[in-house]
Length: 356
Image (cartoon, rainbow, N blue to C red; front, side, top):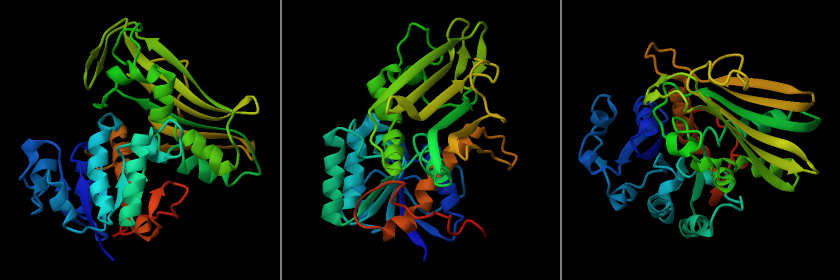
């Protein structure tokens, strides 16, 4: 049965997903919500660069709820705009409409203690009021470090440690990283994510999720942060990273159990593949990697690419995969009980309608 969906957000992720929805036999796009007043009233096809669809962008949440879709697929802004995200999502949930989202990454594991009550309670109450479900995903945090490692751990008799790594070249990436990661800033600058509590809240949700799934309770969650300063100017999609500034960062979030690191999330983000050459790389460029030390030990690398000749960067392909994980989960989400939904609650999501 075709699922009727409303999409909120026409940024990088939302735009690419909308282009896929209009071609899919499994989904019907019935409405599009936007925050930018300049997009209101425009055909979403014109906004995202495809043929006109007949669906006009709107910022009227009540009008979108009145369409009675099977789900809201929410690609809104980050948790920096939590209040607005919660306002939109609770309106749909209270009306009995399930929500799949990529916006609030701490919600990948709502039980994480770093999630403030004012972020959790309104969603819990809205789900109960409308008998609806709310699922949040991403790539990292998200399926690259929940679905992938947890699936592989299910092939082991013993897991001594599991590491999920993002190893990306940000040269062509146009997302935010200066204030957040300090890339392009002086090495004396302290980015938001270098602060341990913020890093764990923003990126660490899958660490306690993996521990919970494995049946253990962590003693502690720790972090590390390293910077690499470039000796020469480097070009990027966002301008020049000047010599003497940070051109690569490496951080880890570590789940400690019985005095040892058993779960590790690692990021290595570079401007240029030759940056920080001593730090980990994949066997290919721009990969997500899982390494399990266990019985048996397992290594897996996943690369996201466009092979359509568009020349779009691997990071952009990863953004599309992120969006499609949320969309393709809608049929399963509709069948689940009301309340918070995590990767541990979903069945296999095979991508209905993708082969055509």
